[in-house]
Length: 87
Image 1 (tube, rainbow, N blue to C red):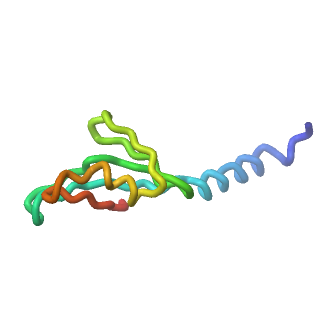
Image 2 (cartoon, rainbow, N blue to C red):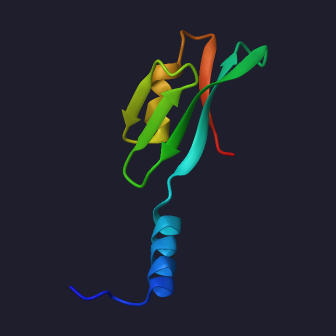
């Protein structure tokens, strides 16, 4: 098979593909009580059709249909509320 184009042009095409398909980074934060305390519990990547999330401790990896669905794993009773934050 013949190359589609020159090296520089092909590199530019690949760079555009990377930019167009890059996942969006987000954090899952946990709010304790009513603004009593909080922490980053996990980091995730939002893709077009799903989200991948890993806890900051590295013990929990989650694949969810969306970032919002991933929050369910980080709710602890009624006193710890998970929230999405987008840097």
